Image (tube, rainbow, N blue to C red; front, side, top):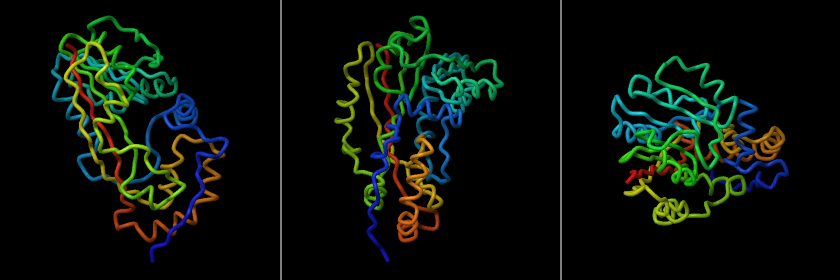
Length: 269
């Protein structure tokens, strides 16, 4: 039997941290030392990251020099080992870079501790053939400086999760404040077209289907990067209701949700 369960809004908790804020990344850095999702789930393929990797690969040669801005613990950066001349990963979280260096066994892949929020990155003009990131549009201006002529700038941006998730758990997940299918609105919000030196902007929407395996994975996904006080509050206030909804709506694969991602490409003129 389908039941409507109302949940408290965790973002109203005094210890709540705005996701993807500097404070939120600092919490991840202190707790786990890596940017990796802790909940259990499976995905339909191709995933957003698979599509992103394929797009990047289509612009590379064995002589390419590439830069990963906001590389985390370097898992994605290390994929370019033996594929390019040099891959550099930078991040402003010390624990992330420490782990990236510990796991790195390639002479062509390097990791640097850099404040990626700075207006100027520590690289010369016309250094890289391709720069990619999940960071915001402020980087695109700097990318146009460090890219070689005709070089590519690429981004992968998470546009939220839904596919029924937000209506199933009202309060725990609030409605999206924008239409994820409106690409013109995305271009306006990120101000892509205002970036000097970059042209031929292209935006691709990727609907990534994910199945959350267990009841607790709904809560882990919601509380990713949050402090212990928030996690304990959410578990205490929401677990029983989430168990009811999960039992009503999960399939054999788990609870189906949709992650909206955007692959953005531009070329240096």
